[in-house]
Length: 233
Image 1 (cartoon, rainbow, N blue to C red):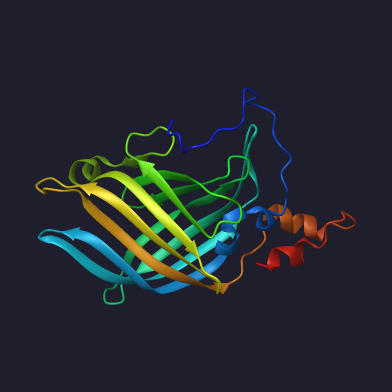
Image 2: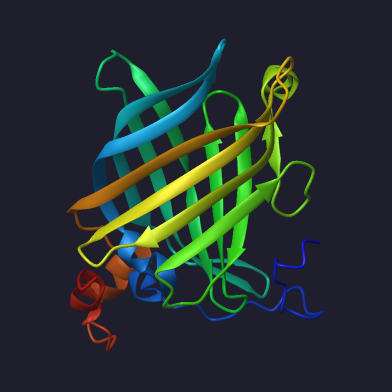
């Protein structure tokens, strides 16, 4: 296992912790990312037949809290996301992507999953703290813990050997990312760095996760303040 990946759970594989129904209050460094965001300053460096090309893009990024998840003693609080990207000069989808941003409090790490409709998926992981404003996650081809899988054509023609995404949380309700997928392309002398960057600004608040919404509506449970707590990002 990558030494940067953390597993502090010991030998008990089945005892589940008691999770908090209010996901928004427990997202750690991901909390400022909850909601719906838009960014119009995207920059994409991608390979073309004669080298590289840079193209701008606009992005709609929706991140909504899910109920806490457990794998035995492992506990996650997370956001389900969908990002839809358009080119300002072309008709049709430029990029579409779904997955989860997950905060693992005990291990103090973020787990990011990515799936795209070109037949590729990955899991990227990185250590951070609950109050971090910057963090970085990585995935590596061949890893059993934070790996990359691709369909046969992509594996042959545009093999992704590693992936990195760095996140920076702004002070104005925005957040930014830079992702770098390192590609091996037949006939080229050096790996190609497929880099995407954008800054995203919140345009709508998140919707409370289903369990939190049920608890808020329950009478006499003593945690009716969850609605206000969750809305204060």
